[in-house]
Length: 281
Image (cartoon, rainbow, N blue to C red; front, side):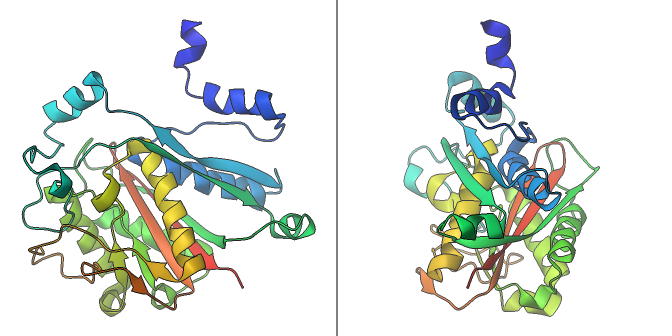
């Protein structure tokens, strides 16, 4: 039927019916922050003892005439059509917009003792979650990065960690002229001198922008990075933007020794989300 098919929470509803999940059943839609907010709110449900297990993340397929036409009309997409493999180039001076991608990223979050009792393989721990609003513009980020800064600080406060305890950030890093500079400013103002010690990368440099699925996929990448102690390269950075003067790991993948990492998502409407993940020993 048309009406049920167009209601977003039919995704979680159908999964609940198919697998018999009888706990919290909801779908959050917050543009490009959707996956991150879904994981964060799933984390909260377990914290509040409303559930032992939450399955959460994001999925999107927008490579349709409507999706491509809409973002092209908004001048959000890269026009590097003659060199598509290098079109997604976060923090490079030649970036001109994001590359649209499709995908999904879903995590199984579980209360620790519940997971241990059933012998689950534990990849990492969700240790903090933060949100904020720019209250600035529908599609542009606040120029100072103040909203993103508050979001990251909120996630650190929730995790009970100091900025100096974070070793890695999986950035929003979309390859847009404004967004990349703003996120760099926000990271520097959040972490101050420690920002020089951080390793930052962009998964979108390799797979494009998955919109509502981006936060889910990038959370998975962050978790696996902690588990394997290895960080992927940010590709296509040939001439790094002078104001984006952080370590974006542009040369190759890197072996690391990190305990805590942060994943950022920022969406249209000025909605921001950050997750802190910690290595599980």
